[in-house]
Length: 112
Length: 115
Image 1 (cartoon, rainbow over the protein chains, first blue to last red):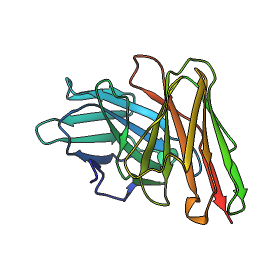
Image 2 (cartoon, one colour):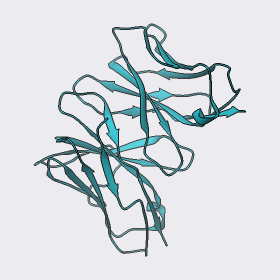
Image 3 (cartoon, rainbow over the protein chains, first blue to last red):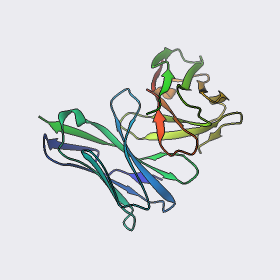
Image 4 (cartoon, chains in turn cyan, brown):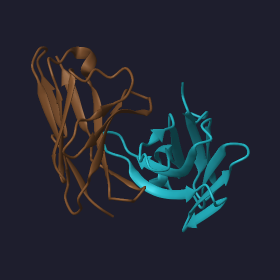
C-alpha cells in the first residue's frame, strides 16, 4: 500500500522553464511534507518542506504547494537549471513519529 | 545543516557473511535514527526505527534477526546484515533527526553487493 505516490517517474524540462513535480498521499494523518533531491549512490538532500497548516512555502527557486483537500502537493522549480537534474522524492510525516514515508520519486532532467 | 555520516559507502561481501553499516550524527545528538533500503528505480523503504538505548522498531515484513540494529549511543547506530544473500544487495541509507525537529538528515548511503 503506497501511501505517498509520485505518478510521474520522469520529467524533462528545458533550461529556464518551470519544473512541476507532483505528489499525492492517502493518509490524512500526515501533517508535514518534505521534498528531497537525490543523486545516484548518494543520500537524499533536503530541499524544502511545508506544514499542513500552510498551503505554500517558498525558498528561492523552489516553491511547494499543498492542497490538503485533494491530498496533493507539488514542487515548482523556476527557473530550472541543468544542475537540478536528479531524482526528487516527496516525503510525508505524521506528528510525533518522525517516520518518513517516501514517494516513488520523479527523475527530473533539465535540458540545456 | 547537520551532518550524518554513513560508512562504508560501498561494500562487496560473500554470501553467508555478515556486514555492518555505521551511521553517525557528527554534530548533533540523535535519539532516533532510521534505516531505509532502496531498490533500483524504487522508493526509499523504511526498514526500522532505531532508538538510543532501546530495541529497534521494525516495519512490517522486515526480518529483525536478519537486519540487526544497535543504537548504542546518541551519535551512532549500526545496521548489521547477517548471513547475507544476493537478494540483500541494495542501497541502504540511514537518517537522523534532531530532537523535536521534523527535518531528517541523511547519510550518504551504502551500496551493498552480495556475491
